[in-house]
Image (tube, rainbow, N blue to C red; front, side, top):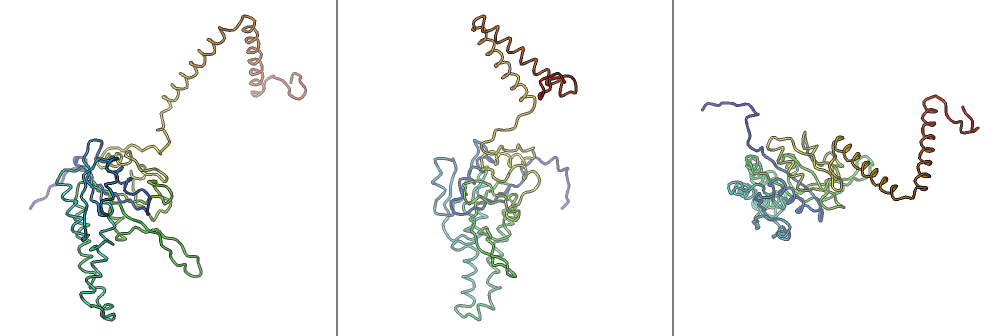
Length: 327
């Protein structure tokens, strides 16, 4: 078989796009994942959801349009790979897996599978369990790796919603214990994807980039997600643009209007000034003659004071504030 190569710029197909977002209970994982998926798929695109938590995503069917599959145990790794392939072949524009943690900790998932293997190999013999522990990981970890390799071949964008939990790490050499936030999945998986980050604990759906060890972002992705951003469809659209090889637009933070160019700002300021001037002259025209004369005299006096101040600041002649005399 012969191989030919072409310039990278000639490839117009969408690059693989995989996003993992981790959050604790009530952090807005599912809602945020669906917002990202809708932004990636576009307003008319088709979104598929693989629900591993008894149909919890269906509570959001009034807020989002998507097709769902509620997966029952066992949560074997190969089933997740099969679901992703099926969604791609069916022509969906984005896939949400909520929650992907079940592949690791769910019934029939990797950890449960390893426990079953250990029981099969050693039974209740504690000493034999110690000897067989390494061997009991072979099948589940091999299946997990095969799933990862299969997912990496997919061209459908996938959003992995992952549970997170906080644990306490004992201090060393007399140091205080520290709190550690971990994703409930294989520890390496968040680094296999294109972008990974966690959500804030106190606010639903807000990006938390306070710990550099808790996220993966490179290049253009650093311009798409900012610490404190609330996940929106704009973030998904920007990711989709990047995957198509386009320059992604930087989403505006919630509550902040997009920045405008200086020409647009100058035009707005001039329009407001003209509007104010028109209003002033309309108001002045309605005043009696004596009032208009007095207003003009006050304006002339204020203008003279301003001119004197300008001259003094420029080093010329002006008023001496302390003596009330010419300087």
